Image (cartoon, rainbow over all chains, first blue to last red; front, top):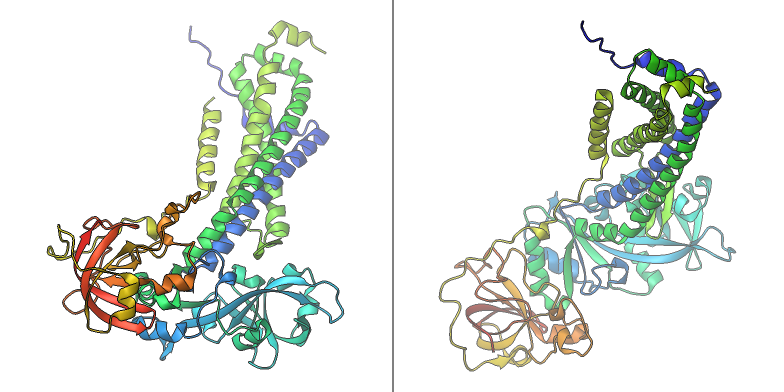
Length: 393
Length: 177
């Protein structure tokens, strides 16, 4: 006689079971959505911070700073003759229509006030620039207004300055005034910069900032390599020891800053994982109760010839469908409401990035939750002998 | 059971895809090509008649032949990556490791010294090709050259861009005191 081989329960059985208790199903769905949302937020935070730094540093830009200030441009002071010396000594710097890609800049953290009478201001990074900055920092795009003119106390604001200062966008429109060092500065333009840290900066003419700062030295010179190599710039620095310069690739500088914030990113992950584990263990209790009430049904299925493995698989399918639905709901909420939300930190502002990898992490969390949230309860419920399970109330 | 295994494989793939990309190795981690220096550059016996870096900087003029003693130092990376150039500091400037209690990982950067003093007591050494341009490739670990090493260089002053900057084209180098 041929052995009757019973296969797994149909998938529809798992899906139909979800409708038996709508309240429990919705509760489970919302619970897994919350856990996935927590993981999505953590992933979005980490991805947003990483891409903010990664996009800021261009591989072919080299920053010249004073020796000993490699970790903070704001502490650097270099001689005003540096740009011309670099241009004369380093062949192959990128040029367009005979305009070299050499940008001398001043980076200063200053308190900025929205009114003359404000008691406190918000520290903001102000970058003093020349028009060459727009050649060198190719991510920057003027979105309205114009470049500030020298000698007119004018400013250009990055797209995230409002978030950085905690003021509404209406306060920072063109024509509005900000107060820096006791003087009124007029906003004449806005720029965006592809999600880089520059979007939380305020830009003004270099000489105007030097007057405010009362110094003639620059913080740095940023130049773009054309045919020149990084070694040529490094050689220039080591040949002109009198200028006391160090050359760093812009990408290397921001990679070091990114590394500095590594512990914060690690803490965010640890917090999210602990939250997810809390959700998982809470869900385990709920699933124990849910499966315990179906012991008779499970006993009946075994009587009909379905193996314990088949029943466990079906219970896991049920749980995975519910958790996946929750994960998709969380993903939709994340993409619509969380993506791009500004987060302030010491260097500026970045936006949460609910991108592909973040969504994959969120959806994978949902799948894991569905699998492991039901496995142990299912195994426990199936330990009972069939005769006892059929008699259970 | 097969469904469970399939789900595990899918999950695993998703996790691998979703994991952060490991940072790719930075350009500084790549092995630098070494400069192809002339065989006669490194001398087995110590070059004689050497003056200290500070004395050479005060007295030497453009075109002078000089013999200078010093230590390969003056910054975290005294060798230029990709060019046969390094900085030489006066031997009297103490390395950070010679200061009691200093555990600086790069003692040859002389960070304890004021920057002006450092600029005054360091010069630049190049090994050039026939056209007068620095050879391509680093000099680090060539002929025993390393940060902090004491050496004697014989060469010609080829550039003096300012009172504090002096560049010597090396013709012979002996390593060690």
